[in-house]
Image (tube, rainbow, N blue to C red; front, side, top):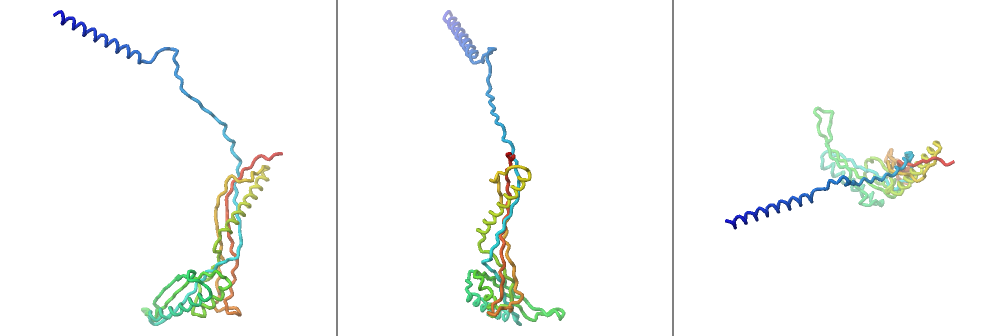
Length: 264
């Protein structure tokens, strides 16, 4: 009985010790309430004065380069009629073959000849009601690129002699306008700079000659259209007279320049 009592006392003592220890640990973990404790929050801000706004003028510039064309494009056509579709086609094929042969004989390569239009249609007699089919019409057109412009007139006249019955006109152009466009861009920038300088002078300011920004606006290459009044109108050599005219390559830009207070 006495042994059991001693054990009970020992268990109660151990429990009390554990409770006291836990209370002490909890107290250690709680933050201090000392009135002298201060919390420091980083709040560093660095301000730099903003750069003063620049005085900007925006101008447009344009430049033109005029060149002689080095490429001509012409359409040659053959038109035939016959009572039957087969006859109209056979006649047309024979004439177009002769036209192609004459074009190639004047130095035009196969890669520069393209069939652009082929059409077979019925021909009606509208004097009767209802209209009746009286035949068939066959039309065939080729587009020819001519690099040697001095041969263009002869190419046309020889094609007529071979059986060509029409042309849809001649277009002159520049085969590669890359370099001409670059020159036009440079001229456009010079034009823009001159305008900006005029504005700065009028405002009594100094111009910073290097532009703040430059952007391309547009590009154009204006071909010259020419139409032969008559394919039979040839000069003494038999070649159709042709005038090539000129091609104008144009570039436009927009540029921004800074102007500053003029120094006295």
